[in-house]
Image (cartoon, rainbow, N blue to C red; front, side, top):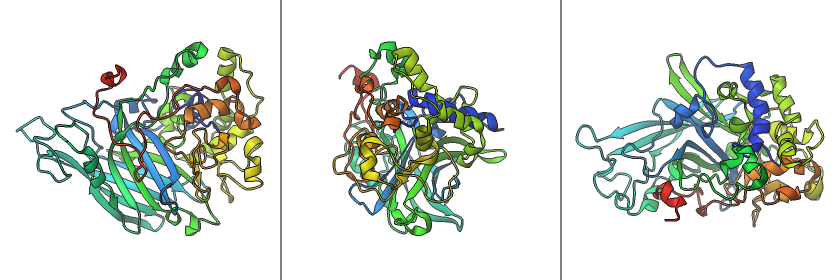
Length: 463
């Protein structure tokens, strides 16, 4: 199911272009807006407010819960001091859930931050000695946060905590894993929370922009994001906390996206939005990218250009023009399911598994919109397949998104017709040859690995 999975490449080009072009043209914000991984002009100058990726999956070790995780601040270089990376204290960071199909948030988890900076005029250092705990006096700069759960009944504070600091190196933080573990706290009502620095777990080769991997698939196999870090916000909550009326059995499908609201003279303004990978980046034309980030998903259906870009996507035509892969016939109703409505049932290898059931399409009234959709009732896969639903692994992307889902390869396959025929496209079997993250994922919450403290240029030199 390829969704705009190519993150900033193919898929994004097709679907994102569609959504962005239409959505953005429809509503141009008076205030600045942003998007993921530097794909929009305005957000590229405001990385602390830039969403990079959203993940949503049933927790593999605690299957009565769901984990929602979103990243911000792209391409953090581990040695980027002395002013290391931190969340914006003038912004609200959100993970939003639609559980009734109207493309409006029914449950929002919202983080706000304050900064404790003890450096003053005495030092430039982030810490002036080894840091062995989050409350260590040697840690001179740290952030604290408040987490709220917002519904139509109002906002309720469900947690507070300390952000896991940037990893400044082994001399400063001799046991960083311990520090990071301290940043995992419980929340009211049951569940866990985390805020802090992480490894950039989105694995892919970004040379897709050089005529789709060099025009002959010669430019593949290099994990472009290897060695970089991000800042993560995550919650693990009981499934009934986000399902409609708390009934997971009757209402298992939820839509998920993240946003950033930045303070301005006119109040808080949404400057970033991210649901499925790549839509905000590659698909949206440059002139429309900024506006897309100001939109709520319920606006998508009112923009004809959005539907047209999904039903008549650009990426398959690029694949045909550059690689000679015949583009599937349009209109692409299979892509409409992936990007705008959720999947009712599939053909080919997964038809027998689904029968007449839904995968991740809301059974009630549905307003087409771009977001990440997850069926909370699909069992956890004992042996996950990186190609997700396309490979018959129904718990994988685009049914939510796990950390190990290879969204770029999935997106390329789907755009090339695999989502339509139920058969993988042999010519794209190797994909971008980046099939996994360079650092293993954790087996417990927050699952995303801790940050690197090795300079990126050292990483690529093999040091």
